[in-house]
Image (cartoon, rainbow, N blue to C red; front, side, top):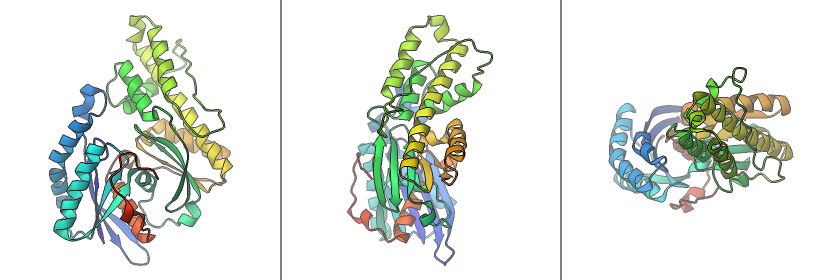
Length: 348
């Protein structure tokens, strides 16, 4: 079986193809996974401009499709999967309309996919996983648009335990990076500057809050963290604001504040619900320091809990995770997809 997937939920145009060997020991072979980024286009806006992103998707989709098909050696497609939400509605419709035309031409089925669910299953490229050993699980999905803690009871059975009440973690990275003059996207450059910070040689001390960390719920709020960073920044002289010492120190403290909150709440949920594993997903899960500290803390506090981290290249938005989710939907004979329509605020 050949599955083709389309991902246009935000500013990345993605198309991927996988081949699934339907024998008893199923194998998934990645035939192609092409992503066309719009970062350079949106940099000057400090974020994604939806209708500009839509225009770029319309321009890129035929080119990305051709490249993906060529790389996959033009196989016969059996199923087309496409992201239908959550995301930016103009962008989502671009991908869905392209998928509809493709489905009509090829006379195959179309499977609508939930973008958040796909981030969970980006961890399971090899179908050898026995989900009975993985679930129940706590999944942390953390990106520019989402920060959620999800209880995954079993495949297709989810409960959102907590989510951001304002800014997502990735959005906080972006806004503080812009404040520091580091450009967009903020996550990678904040991570880079934080790594360059040397505590032993820096006399500059910055202390930021860990919002909602010790509240009884599993919700997040990163708007206050962004505001605290802004107040500290404004309290400094212009010369200090522009200094590398200050920028690196702020980047380090901001990153650690976000990591502390994410890890504390995720592990707390894992303990309360007595889960078998913790699953990370979303663009921020590509952060190396976050991954390192997550593994360290899980090993220290939850000895019998497995930790699943997606390959860094599959953490950010991509179509491969859409193909994988489609595969697991079909494998588990899950019919939810037949009722799914485009919804920018789609929930699990």
